[in-house]
Image 1 (cartoon, rainbow, N blue to C red):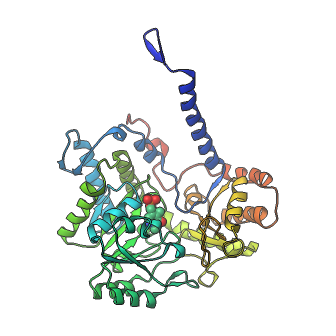
Image 2: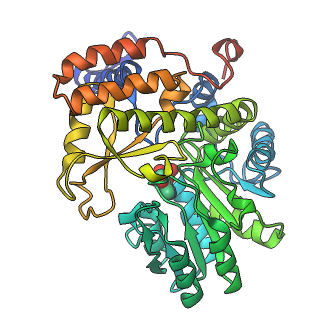
Length: 437
Ligand SMILES: *Cc1c(COP(=O)(O)O)cnc(C)c1O
């Protein structure tokens, strides 16, 4: 650092480091602008959300709830958060909503703090069957020191074995019956599980992280009316907002609302990223307008993509159930624990198609699984429809079945993607301009 003519100028080497960040950020942006983002937990945000997320709110604090703050300067943010709570209640049809959580995992930690005490029993889907790490001993369940038992799994139907799950709940009488997965092809038959849970005084917690946009769009299932007492989730997977979380409940009981609010603050958050909360509120408003069409198009595209992959010759899971009822499609690329999924993901990346390897039934090693978990929510958001799903499946076949050079395929990936650069199902760019945020 040196000071010349009264102003500090950075040294070559420190500026060089910042420039590396700029270059890598631009390059990462190009990867997705020119390629096909198909990771099932990801999405892109609207122009208005992008602008809000980069606003002055980024540097601000609010603790407490609207109207009951520990800091001055929160009046405008109170307007934003109050609007957001009302919107979340209406979009998710929930008597209670807290929109402060900074991620799906944080929502789960808070919910488990509100609903259980250390040593209490909990039942959940195992990570090997698609449950999330926060449902495991290595994650939030272990952090709360809960005594975990996992449901039996129906590999054919790709959902918990319902009779087995109900029997387990009746036998163990867990404090919390946790439902929901990261590999989430089909709605969980929730009513039976909730009946068993409520019979033994267990709270039903539904983790909708992946499928929250589908639920809000009315195309997957309606957990809060099918017996879930609490629903958690991420605000950035199929729900197309900035990264963050939601905490929702079907309970009308104000004591429960207070417990859930307190579990977030002072429980697990101090700053709760006001710029992201404001972004969530805009995303909720956009969802109210466009969300139903978006959710319907996602599921239509996922089914069409799965059928097209199967027609190309891929082994697509859950054929007997028409492959999927969500945004996800699962494919098997080799034997159990063979690492074929890792190899396939690597080849696809060379062609500009970004995916992730995933464990399938039978796999035991997270780093050498046999499959891929694919999501179509981002491609749907930029306007791709069922015709494009056929084209994308054909690109997969060229890379993975016909062993074409991925760099040759990459050119065609770029050409396809060049026609899909505008984010849909949201307010447009011109509606954002003119605001100094
Ligand atoms: C992704 C996911 C989460 C965690 O959400 P983050 O926002 O990434 O913290 C929790 N539960 C399930 C089922 C998930 O798939």
